[in-house]
Picture (cartoon, rainbow, N blue to C red):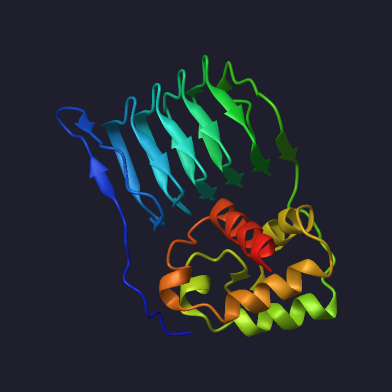
Length: 220
């Protein structure tokens, strides 16, 4: 399928000295970004999709990371000391020699990820750790509604519902099935299919998708 969206990607690498990273505006798809020898101390990262990104020797001390997606991301010698991480998804991530001393992690899903090199990591409330990619049952009504969204460039860009190779994002669907009923979810997806591109533009992460569907449900 032809790519019809602009690539938004970060490449911040400190060589002779550490580079400072300012907080990033919410709702960006920053897949395959590279950050190395950087400091994001006390900064905010809100609803950013860092799918396939690489972080090396990056300092997130006392930062706020909320609603972000890290699918296939890698973290090498990163410091998350006293960082507040919430409403995030870590899927098939790689951690090497990372410090989580005093970090607060809550309302987050971690899937197929080895945490053995996450020093002093502890979890607060409602952290789901899944050892493997979850299976979920898709009824025909749900499949039909997903097909309605299949060609939507805004939805496809962030791979929140559809993956390459005509596959569905079963992790996100699994999480959504825990929030909405079998009858609600197809109807909510059909409602999304009728939205304009401007209404969908900020749906860059799983949490943004969930919040949008919750809002739509409340006004039906």
